[in-house]
Length: 242
Image (cartoon, rainbow, N blue to C red; front, top):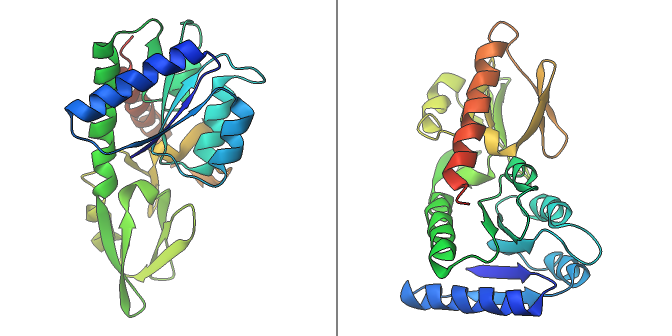
């Protein structure tokens, strides 16, 4: 895996680097680690290189870790974020961005190990995919790449950050493919949304992180919003290890 460490304290970044190297050695994980003491340097590198995991300090020279995290998620929605900071006050903002963890400095190796174990468990779901017939060919789609699925003119439409995959089949035949994945919510007739891509909700719409809006069943709005709130609550409490 590829990891980026962003912290303007050379002492803190050296300790984190040491901890991660120890973890990778003990768990027999091959990794590439890049360190950045400048947020500008990291953002420049992130345009050309994709990272699996990014460690971010909250307080940086020219901006905040929260702002950097938003940019990272736009560039690579699958990238996981772990914040490390001396301040507790930004924890809520961090987990609204679906941060994997929020480490309070000074943290121990055991705390860092817990965070990386959590990452390993989360990363395992990246190997899950569905397979659909697209034209005459079979196409594999990673579960984590699916933003939402809808139905039009007898075709399933799987929307990903890069393109839309269309497959001729009924929604009833397709929906069981996603039913075992808890991040998918049936929000409207023949429409399922991946809640990991939802930024917020407003009136009768979910607003995705790319700005798209998906309608919510008016008659079931209360239940749907509650299901989304429960998912976010479980996500935050599953990842928060302060």
